[in-house]
Image 1 (cartoon, helix red, strand yellow):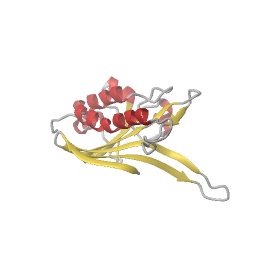
Image 2 (cartoon, one colour):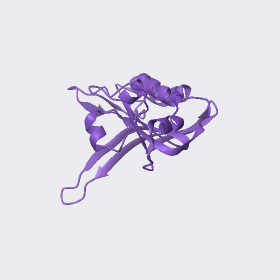
Image 3 (cartoon, one colour):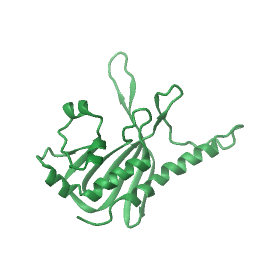
Length: 195
């Protein structure tokens, strides 16, 4: 992880970092493979989430069948985008889930998905989230459409080449400002009321 940013906005403490998480295979032909490349967020909430919840994109029937047990929220727009599971394996029903993940939070996550965009080609949410105790955790992949309409990860802008003959500084700075500005857009869309 690098480019760690900490601060406070609208009374909420936050941390944000760029992460390039890789897995190394062992053995004779060891290699690195990308696990995640994107932005990580931790934002203080005004609520207390117990049990903690894991919120992941709803990729359809396959994920439902072979992933963690998901609990429907009963909110059609939310359930079409996300699957929710308690982090401790608790057996929650829809009513209990809605007491922890209130309709305000469900609407906020749907709005965040709309404002932050989706993964190109698939149209699935770019964000994964978690709620635990007094914090909202979120990952935001930096995957974009590549040259042949495949997914590739966009690097976090490196602006150390200011004096290059053909500088990409303006383009990279625009992306950097957009990436850093995400924290403020996210906080602006989170519910303010405690539950």
